Length: 127
Length: 274
Image 1 (cartoon, one colour):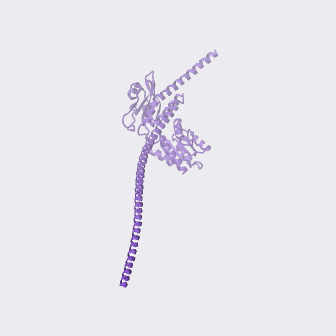
Image 2 (cartoon, each protein chain N blue to C red):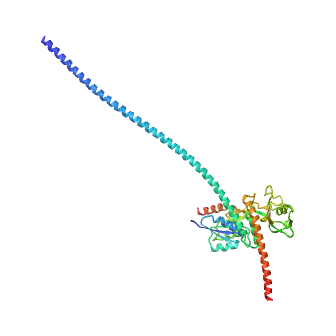
Image 3 (cartoon, each protein chain N blue to C red):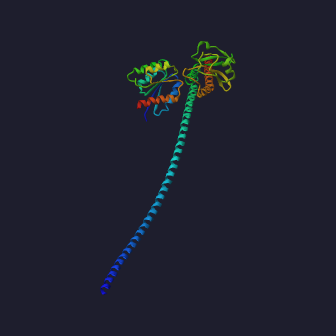
């Protein structure tokens, strides 16, 4: 069975738990949580991840900055990134995708939608 | 005369010869005829038998065809039935999935609500739930001061300064909700954003411990992508009415008891010193 390592970057413990709950339904999934962008970068430097799921509005380092830093990092630039945020306006979506995010999901999230996006990315990578 | 008699005898002899030959030929024809009759009878018998066998084979084939046609029809019926059952299972699977997701949301929300005894942290968790799980953009948590019978905002998200006014119990929509303990849902389109009116919220949920109301969660505006309330939202409202109230009440009591404990400890320390 293939293993998938997910990095969930979210300052809200409620959302972290909810996203982790959803991802754990994917067989072979392993979820690591980070509170903000800096915490995420630390975890990226020590472990390998298949997908990063990040919020935008976070203290210390926000999600957009994290996306931009990951995309400019030669080691991690290929990791797919999903933005999960309360910012649901079209311009926010465009900005997130323009920075290099692979998908953009507006809160409140539907577990089925989140899993569908994650599975699409997984199947795209394994194809 | 003898010559004539000899010639006559010869003629008779010849005639008898011809006659015998004719007889032999006739006998031969009769035998041949008998043989032919026998062969004809044989042939008729064979053709009679093979006709019966053909009929039998045809009948068997027809029966087999009917059986196969029936079986085919049964299989088609069964296939349709299984397809219907499959569709039913698929829709039930979707329902169970949705229910499962709803339960996960409720579990996470109530787990987080009861994960702390810190009042401010409880407030933060309620804000997170209302914003992230329900999709509210402007909302507040109001607590009732029983000494003044006034509601005041203890936590809020996205609201302007004009909203920061105390509300007397029984006054306006929010005061009524707290007085009667019944949730309020504004009629009409929840995405109608023609000016947020802080005296007419979209939703007002009383925070109740049994029948005792200690405050309210008031939602004025939803996130742009939130177009309507779902069944899950109403489940969350109902859960918040009880669990958020208990979480806030117990964390408040805990912080008060902590303060009292520290005061008593100070007194005890003073007494010990004396």
